[in-house]
Length: 226
Image (tube, rainbow, N blue to C red; front, side, top):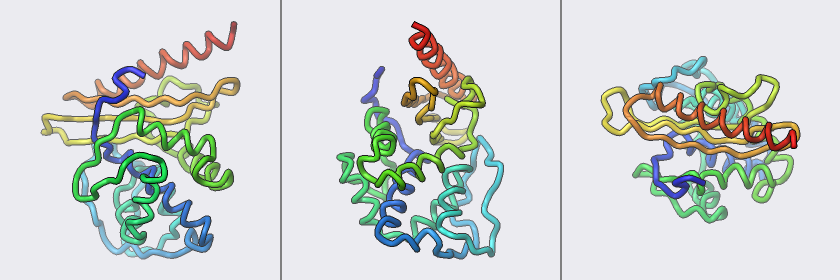
């Protein structure tokens, strides 16, 4: 790790522990994934620099399973808000606590670093918190993520990537942050890559993440040719 303990703000990265908390709940009550929730109106009208391809449609019912996919695939903030309002906060706290990641204060931005955040992906890959079936379900949902401006950009299309990006701030913010973290399923050597950036230009930060991803992928290719 390089500056692996430097603190950033998690932003949309924290949708992953919410996903994990729901799938843990589903291990106890499988029917929860089919539960219908009504999306009446936007709970969060957040500005997004990287526009999602799809958003929830108002005045519609969605299953929890569908909302989890929207939350991860399109980083839909309203899907996350609706899911968050339907779960006991203690379940989310239990997820953080069980993984040794401290207890978040939901009233304040949650600080995170690459070393800690990578832990969510490690426990999914190793199926050490969820069952193997639930872990595979979570990783499959994460491979649906549509954000291709970060670690996915230099990776060939035939290689799956289970990842989540997060963005913090708007165009006027003095402190802009962009992060991308996930598992790249190289057929011979799957690996975990977490890159967090801070600056004043989202496009340049995205390019920096791409450069790191390209370099690491190149090293993996070289090592597998030896």
